[in-house]
Image (cartoon, rainbow, N blue to C red):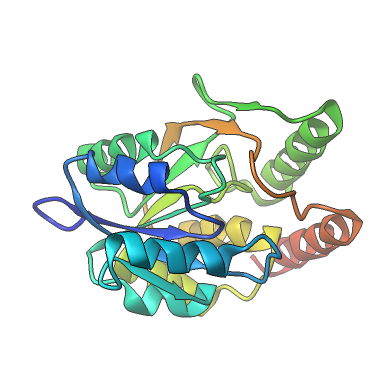
Length: 222
């Protein structure tokens, strides 16, 4: 959101017309950056459809790291657009940021009335376990480190991107840990995370091993 009230949303999965339209009704001016991280789920095709619907001045399809370069607002909202992150929470993120003048506002599944819907027991245990281990080892002062639904001041996001070296699921965790190291303030908004309706999760054995390695690296270096 850029005073008096514009927002840029970075989308990391296929966007839908209904989701984009919901932003039009939010009362904020906005831009959407579609980030394709190589998922074989038709992201590029959907982005091209959105360009036809909303115009090339609204939709930009590019790689994750370079997506931030297109941002023109003072704040950037990063979210998944596979229907797991609902855009209705964006307004709450904005209110929270204004309330405490936070540098980062993070959506949390593990605080207040936040929660997860649609996951099986195995996935819930993996997520809870990863979050618990992270809390014990890193003590970040935030309740949900592995989620990606967040609002950042643009300059803060730029600085964090320069500092962070992790990839995959560890990346989101390192962003919060580095933010605390650099003295940035973090607010939290409880969110409801709903398992994706389209596509499949990329979480697998390799991702879990990479997460554990990244966690130990952060523990040793922070």
